[in-house]
Amino acid sequence: MSVIKILENEHVTKICAPMVRYSNKCAGVDINCGCPQRWAMEEGYGSHLIKKPELVAEMVSSAKRRITDPDFTISTKIRLLDDLRETVDLCRQIEAAGADFITVHGRTPKQRSEPVDLEAIKIIKESLNIPVIANGDIYTIDDAERVGEITKVDGVMSARGMLENPAMFFGYAKTPRECVKRYIEIAQLKEPRFMTFHHHLVFMLEKSLPKPKRKVFNNLRNKEAVLEFLSEHYFAQDE
Ligand SMILES: Cc1cc2nc3c(=O)[nH]c(=O)nc-3n(C[C@H](O)[C@H](O)[C@H](O)COP(=O)(O)O)c2cc1C
Image (spheres, rainbow, N blue to C red):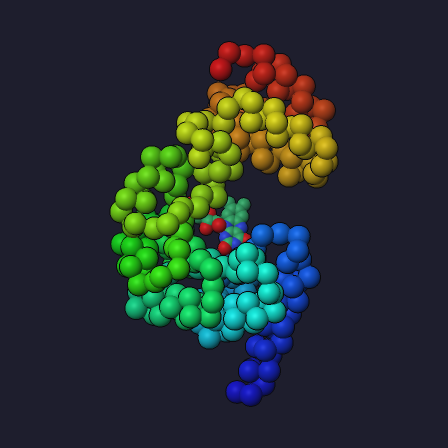
């Protein structure tokens, strides 16, 4: 038992060191207790952590103690436990440890395409005083408003919806051409790996290219081919 405790404390120190190091370079740090991938679970990271409320609370309070900037936020993102009371208890411990906000993906680590449990998010929101952000299956601004109305949360987070349409929160139904153009300009400056560059465009063009063209685009293998394709089949077409 005491060995586990020592390892856990080392875990906390390891997690806090980079938070302190980078705290003057970003606005906050979010502790990921939501990733359900097997490698993360096996290593004791990601959503494995939701079963360890004391450890998560210790990470939050240690980070809060070490970082004195009052504007720097420490937050956590969780998935649901099978038992809602235990989930609320986890959130209360995170809140008591000093977290600035909590994001809740309304699924358990085992769930994939099951509906997001908005009722659970609503109860978590009612049980806490810090802001709660709802996550899961928000693809349009209407989804965001519906989730807000049902759960009464303070904000929403979208992952896949934002990959498909980074302008979603501006009310666009699909990625505007201007956004793709701007993305390419930024990519020219930052030079991400081809796979990253291409993958983002694959997501962004999902709703804009007809299926046969998408098939060709998705199989392109270098930046020059991507730029040539876009100039011929995307930028030259009517919106
Ligand atoms: C490319 C990608 C990377 C992700 N990485 C993480 C991660 O590191 N940690 C985490 O908690 N969730 C991660 N997620 C899950 C999202 O944060 C989010 O909880 C999930 O996709 C459900 O939200 P959505 O329906 O808006 O996509 C990732 C999702 C995507 C699409």
